[in-house]
Length: 161
Image 1 (cartoon, rainbow, N blue to C red):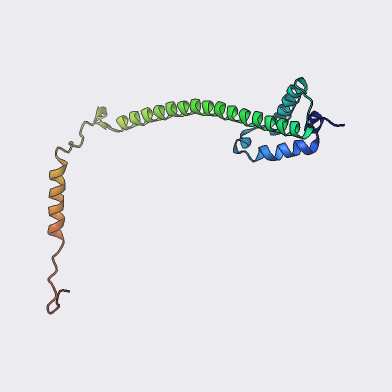
Image 2 (cartoon, rainbow, N blue to C red; image 1 turned 135 degrees about the vertical axis):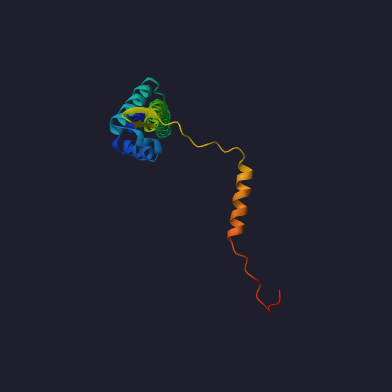
């Protein structure tokens, strides 16, 4: 008679587990899913050998499958967290590269302000004046616009509705 452990390593059962774990979105993160799957099955098998109990083999097989899927999902979550940590480090590196790029662009902008006159290098210090009162500037612009828009006379003979 076949025990639950024997049934656990049967190809039909492994196919069932394989198809179930592939439905997990985290499964796509694995670089070598077949090797990972085989190692989890092996770990569960070894643990099951240590804890063999008498009883209904079908129920024990269900419990083994549940434990195997639990192990797989736990492993996938751990892998996801590790990848998240690596991505965070990559994010820090990207931020540092961005800061370096911004610094270089700032230096290039400063160099663009340099002017060569009479074979001498000088820095052009003319800059726009800062806006002191934005509200007054907006009001002035609105008045200009209102003056530019012609006022059309109301048509004669029409009654307001």
